[in-house]
Length: 189
Image (cartoon, rainbow, N blue to C red; front, top):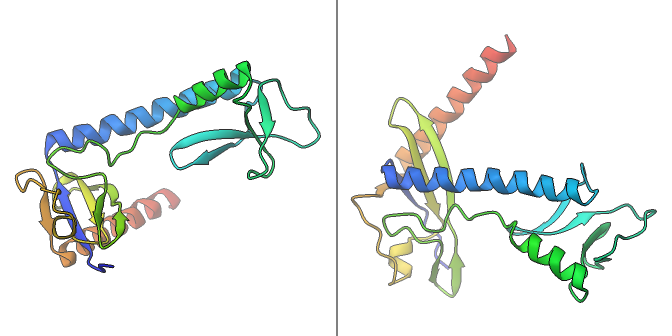
């Protein structure tokens, strides 16, 4: 397995637009999830998730299980749609529509959602950093490998994504941390 750390940075408007669109979609899905919970009498309850998908709802053991729902032995204290019933199929279909978007998916400039290599699947971490000293908003994509070296299908456009030196990346992170500490100190004073 590759132990390389590779970081890309982009300030390209299409990249930032894709990021903001995914963030807005995530906010919309969060609102829709809350509305779903309220509509089914589950307001204020936590949800059970698997990855980006909402799969169930916390449910007290002392309350009856509503029509269309069932206990799931893999989820302690939660109910999931009973997809073998008509009502449960409808509930399940609605939950399937409430999946959070992947910020990694459909990034412009050839940045892949994942890379395959060394008999592993690699998925990057993605962070939007606002650093007024450098470039205001930039999207940083951090890989635990070199995606272009391990996956022959990956071709990242250098006009859209700048490969960063790790020292520069860590300097950006330190500057962001310092700025957040200053902001927190100003709020506490």
